[in-house]
Length: 274
Image 1 (cartoon, rainbow, N blue to C red):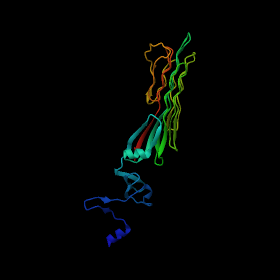
Image 2 (cartoon, helix red, strand yellow):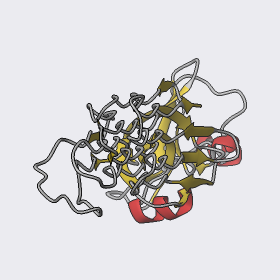
Image 3 (cartoon, helix red, strand yellow):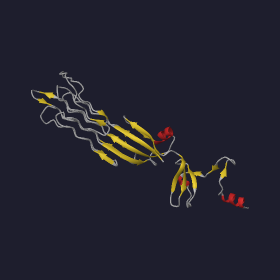
Image 4 (spheres, helix red, strand yellow):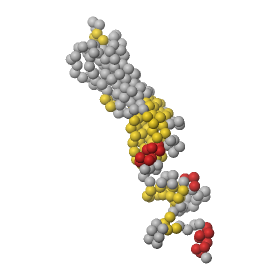
């Protein structure tokens, strides 16, 4: 009589064998009981994890899927972050990502000599932003990585490129730093730092200094430093190129020649399960 009642209600837990495993109900988040009671246990097929109802909310219980940081995707060139591809590679369900976007650094300006010595301005660094994003309903994001500003003879340094995360819901944009002013007059200002928008944390880039002073530094890079320079040819040689990502290049301070290149941008995506 009792066994018939349980079967008719569908409320028993089957088992594979006397010493095997109990077979818990399995279903998606949308298939949860409409009016659960405390103590309900099931396996969530969306989260690939066990969950229980505590009287007020469903929450994960031990075993099942991994949680916390499970992977990092680093973009040093433009591309696409695709959630399904990363989930397949990691074997998890990605719920959130921490996105860091760094704009590229501007180049230093070219030195110039016309009877008076004018050191060129140094490049500004790119903007930096960081944001926590729920990607439950986001499948992919287009990523743009800014190119480094480049130095050129008898010119103001090139501006660094913009780095962008754009997933259709969230857009994080960090512009590149401006190049240092060409050293053909006494007003050789450094380039302006880039801007940052769309993040939970937005940090504008650091301005470069005038007359070959320190370029703008960045979160993931350091400014180009003064280097020994003995070549007095018109082409010059590398002069304190920025290192890492996002920093500015130094303006030329001796000998006619181009300023140092800035550093390229970068986008870092930290993937979180559970």
